[in-house]
Length: 278
Image: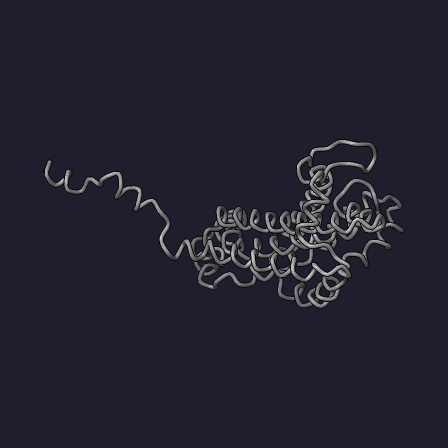
């Protein structure tokens, strides 16, 4: 037995080699790095001309270095660091998206459980979901009369449709065998909801939530350009009015990264809650 264990014991060099990523993992890691490098190089080359209207990556970094190294800067009014600009936008998104998720999931379950109601409301939902976020802002300002609640409403009304539609489809896609077993076992309504309906619909619900959170981030950036105040959307608009193109480019990079993180966060939660998510 001792000889067998010693034979299986790896040397430090073997352990180090085993811990290193394989060729496939390195290739997956290198591919996006190379693609980003090529994109930045092409961008830089295309902006070398003195007549270029947009700055290259090197100029963007040099002109916005203060914003990059000091994102926690606190000034007066809207003169805030990028961390606080993004944090203000995320607060609005968190509130509007949470409301959309709560209402959208409940409504989606209710209409998904009734084929007649779904058939009646689906055309209306399909029309409303195609309305751009900014188109909702004037009517929300006219109805609410305050910019902050109006921005929250724009997030809510933009994000709710994919959540409702995907949740309803998830409820409709519950396998008939599940329903038959529930009838045989004579499950009560609460048990049917928690043991059958909700687990089966969760993958669809999280698909709607992923789409909704992306639309929420898109909506608030667009809405803040018009309502003003602290927020990454107004920061971009203010930079445009001040002809600070490098600050616009930097803000767009941050907007894209935050949007990616929000999408990955919802997806990660979905995998924890619904491991069978497709």
